[in-house]
Amino acid sequence: VAANQVTPESIDQLSNKSFPLCMRMSHEHLRAHHHHKHDGRRQYGLFLKGIGLSLEDALRFWREEFTKKVDNEKFDKQYAYNIRHSYGKEGSMVNYTPLSCLTIINLSYGAGSTHGCPYKIFDTATLKTKMTSYGISQIHIQEIVNYSSKGHYQLACGKYFEVVHEKPLEAGINHPNQYFEQSQIIMGN
Ligand code: SF4
Image (spheres, rainbow, N blue to C red):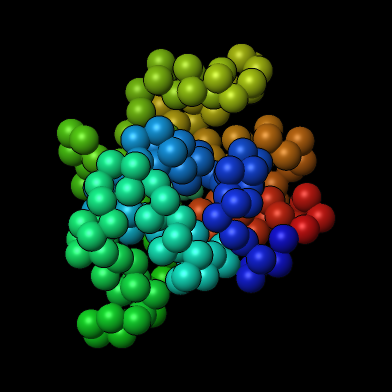
C-alpha cells in the first residue's frame, strides 16, 4: 500500500498486521466506543495522517465513528476543526507530525485516557490477555512482557514486531510510523 492509498476502508485490515500495539488498540477503541479523548485523537489521528490517510478521508473516517454517538452538527463543532488543524488547515497552519515513541511513552496518562504506550500503561496480566487474544504464543508473550516489566517498552514493541512478522527486526522501534513502514516493507507493499 503506497502512502497515498490508505483509505478508511483499509484501516481494519492494516491495523491487524502493520500497526504497533498502541495504534492497534487505538483503532479497536475507536471501533468499540466510537470516541477518543483529545490526546487519544491526537495520537491516533496524527499516526493515520502519517501513514497516508488524506484530510478528506480522515474527516470521513472519524465522522463515521463519532456520529454513532453524537450528531453531525456536534461533530462539526467539536471535532472537525481539530482534525483540520492537525493537517495544518486551521489556526497556526502548522503541519503537525506524528508522535514518536518517546513522546507517547512520556505523555501523562489518567483515568479514562485513550492514548499512551500499552507496554507502559498496562500491567503484565492485561498485556498477556491482550496478546493471547491476538493469537500470540505464551512463550512469545513471556518474552515481550519480560521487556515491558523492566521498563524496556520499545524493546517489547520490537519483539512483538518480530513475532507478528516472523522476521528479525534490525532497527529497533522508535516511532509508530516507522513500525508501520517496516511492516509494509516486509509484507511487500
Ligand atoms: Fe507504540 Fe512506540 Fe509503544 Fe510501540 S513502543 S507501542 S510504537 S509507543
